[in-house]
Length: 79
Image 1 (cartoon, rainbow, N blue to C red):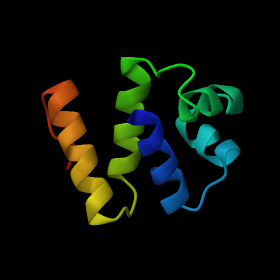
Image 2 (cartoon, helix red, strand yellow):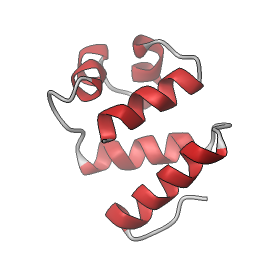
Image 3 (tube, one colour):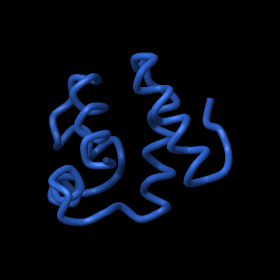
């Protein structure tokens, strides 16, 4: 699920929720709600996340998952 993906990305990048929220230009509470599955990010926020991740060193597993997610939801690739 998207909330699990967010947690996996943040953990892999060794960021706190506050740091990750700052990188994505959202509030800590917004990111926390996304990670806990209470709310879902907007399409624009998801695109921002995908763009941010495309510039990071992520494991091949996460990159493949993000690539699949991008193709499924946005009909384009990010890498």
